[in-house]
Length: 281
Ligand code: 7PJ
Image (cartoon, rainbow, N blue to C red; front, side):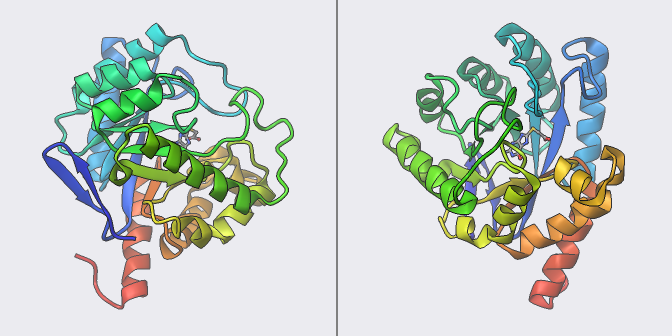
C-alpha cells in the first residue's frame, strides 16, 4: 500500500519500503542507559544509522526479548528520554518502543514523533487515550502472552488467521478510542510468542496481513528465526536476515525494523530495482 505518515511538520511517504533503525538503550545492549557516556554513545550510533539510510529511528529502553522482565517506569524514562532529546534533531522521525503511557507522553515532549508498542496499546490501560491525544503514528504489534513467558509454549490453531484477526480488531478498537486510522501501522510480531514454524507461516503469508490496508511493519533482525533455521549466533545472522528483508519488501512490508541499516538499505534498493526494472532514486 502507498500511505503517507505524518509527523507534525514532516511526512514520510511509504511509496517505497522504509527502514526503521533500532537504537537500543538497554543495559543488555550497548548501553547502561541514562548516563552521559551512554547518551553520547547512543547519539553517535544514531548518527551512523541515519548516515546508513535509516528513515525512522526506534528508541527502546525496555528489553522485550524472551524471558525479559518489566522495567520500572523511572528506569525506562531515565534510559530513553535523554537519548531521544539527543537524537531528535538528526532529521529523521524518532519512534519510541514502549508499552507505558507515561513513557509515550514524556518521549513525545522530548521530540519523539511515533509510538511503537509491542503490546498493541493493551499493556497500559492509559495507552490508547494517550496516543489518541498525542495524535502520532503508532505501530500495533501482535504478541501472544508476555515477554517473560511468551516462548514457553506458543500455540495457535491457525497462526496467520489469528494474527490477522487480532490486528484488524485492535485497529478497529484503536480507531474507536479516537486514534486516527491514518496513524495506524500493524506488525505481526515475529518471535513474540511464536515458534520458527509460526514465524515462517506468517512471513510466507505476509500478503494476508498486507491486505488489511494498513502500513505493515516487520522486524526479524537478529532474532532466533535465522538463528535457529541456520544455526547461527547473533552476529552471524546478517545474510539470513538479508534474505528475509528481500522477501519482506517483495511481499508487502512497508517498513523493516533492523539493526544493520546499511545491509538493509542495499537489500531494499536491489529488490526494488529488480521488482520495477528501474534504477531506484
Ligand atoms: C519488535 C519491536 C518487532 C516492532 C522488538 C528485538 C526485540 N517492535 N520491538 N516489531 N521487536 N514493531 O528487536 O529483537 O518485531 S524488541
